[in-house]
Length: 87
Image (cartoon, rainbow, N blue to C red; front, side, top):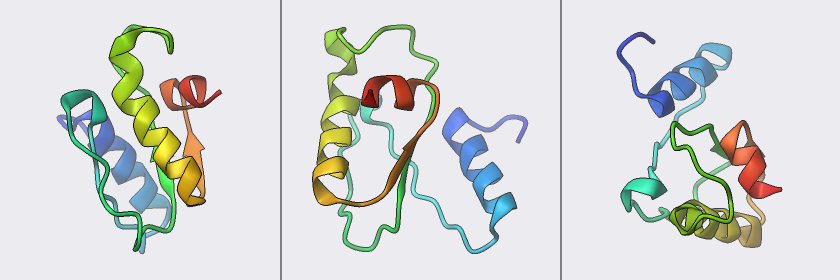
């Protein structure tokens, strides 16, 4: 896990817990749009190295991705920043 991005390290931890777990890492803060959720079993919103709160306009890309996931009904989990923003 050393040398991996935060998202990559999180994906490594998930696949260590369940070898059948395949991950797609998206970075809404970097302008990456949400992929199709048709073949997605669940979504994890991880922590962030970004130091701002949910009211900051820079949080909008992740908030928009979260709204899309919540609307789709795909199960989701938030940790750290993902949990804070979801709340």
